[in-house]
Image 1: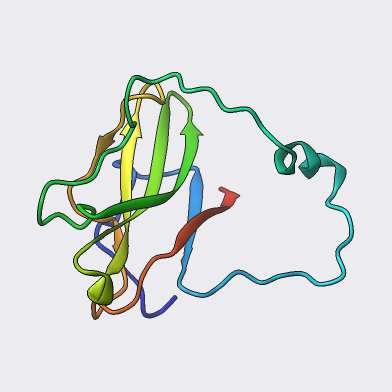
Image 2: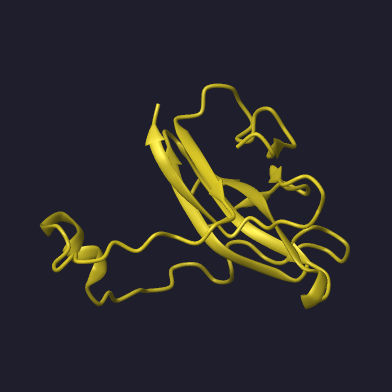
Length: 139
């Protein structure tokens, strides 16, 4: 990712994070010929029942003019010892000019997150979007 730039050298607020993230601006690959998913993945792919346990959204749109004042989507939450780390895609602007950046928030309880005001990752030039985030591996 030579054309990518971090806006902050330590996106989780301290050195030594236990999660490496990969942000891509390319579509996901589809594996052809795969019949059934592995047994350990089946519970995650089956129908699930979700229950709200927070009074409102855990992350809201940014204030007018901030990088995430129009859309927030594609969240990823990871637990790191005693706190929860949330990465998400956020955008601002009109549809024809919209660019998504990587946002970050931290929580002690997984229900109330404190967002950073600026994105932690953006592509230079302001024309390419962060479409999703996925954990790559623990380090």
